[in-house]
Length: 99
Image 1 (cartoon, rainbow, N blue to C red):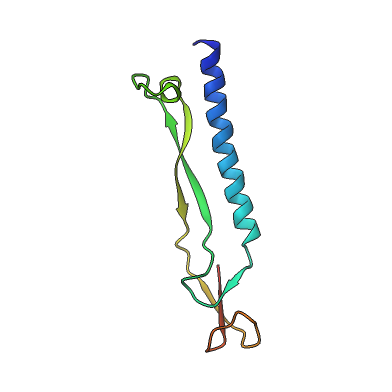
Image 2: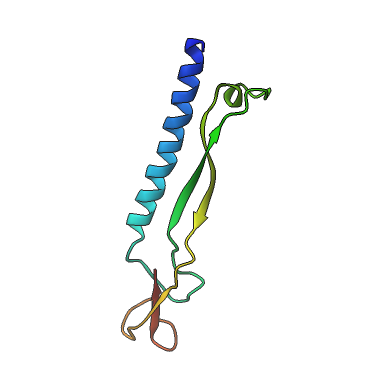
């Protein structure tokens, strides 16, 4: 394996780690946010990674191997509905929604 292949693999790992850290930061920043509807409520996200093993590809990154972000999944956990009529984000019925 040439030296530059090692750098390409390391670069793909650092990019994947960057996506993971940004996703975690977004989840933490929005952990207790509320919305006035279930549709607007924040849903936690999680990156899904996959190995790159295709050595016959014409793409130089895929030729060397490594890891990439396959997708960023969105949680399907139920949204919590709380009665809080004095909250500025409360809907007409007095409810706010949070993850």
